[in-house]
Image 1 (cartoon, rainbow, N blue to C red):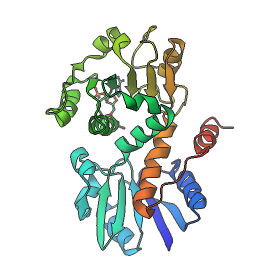
Image 2: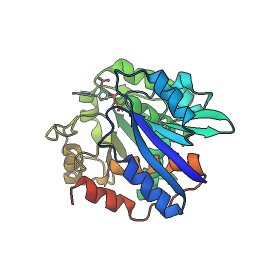
Image 3: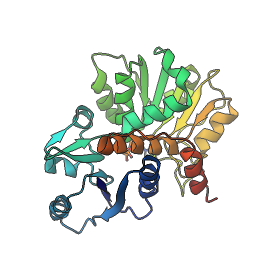
Image 4: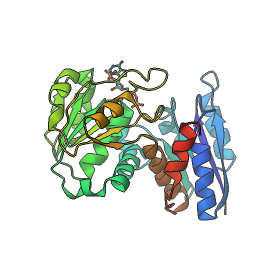
Length: 281
Ligand code: ATR
């Protein structure tokens, strides 16, 4: 089998996904290609998708701004994609186009690979900062993984409340303001930063400011440009263990590749290699 895999989105010229999936194809000794299919906002999305389907692709990733638009062109969605209302991975299987969302599982896998012990006690206190698409995926995955205490802090409280509804029956989630999160930051075992604040070119910004964290806390930022965000630098100073954003990218891709090929790629030193690329080494 010769896999034909693609990425659709706009703009995508600087995407790291082709690099990652070429590595995966090499590691697994599978034949195939992973190429960019950029769809400009001026073009007809529908026509592009019709053409893509005609090209007999085996699967593709979907990124901004098409994660919702793609849904009406698919035959089925998996539960997570349904819950998220957003798709980032599509596979052509048994004559059907099926949509998945790998954000949450990808994040969870990345965290578990670095901090497996964290998953042994599900009553840890977790703070999720932000309430966009990524936060939604991560919240849902943490809920499914059985964690009991998930709080959400966001500038716009209503969006955080929307996310908290996802787990209304299974959890008591406190929705807090950013200020309240800052004041209570010392209560959390894991703090996950999912907003775009601190991303290049605004690397001198941080969503929260703090100097003390709980002993053995883990600080995680899904921003990976730069890798060492201001948020992570402060957290490190405050004694936290650090979890970098580029690993979510890798494990999300690992899960997508598994959906397409049924093969789970061992990560080996790919995170170090990707880190080197991101740091321009
Ligand atoms: P994604 O889907 O990639 O996660 P998004 O939907 O654009 O991204 O979500 C962006 C998140 O960053 C939101 O939580 C947003 O807060 P609001 O819901 O209040 O908009 C947060 N965010 C972005 N810029 C921010 C800023 N300057 N200050 C505080 N929060 C910010």
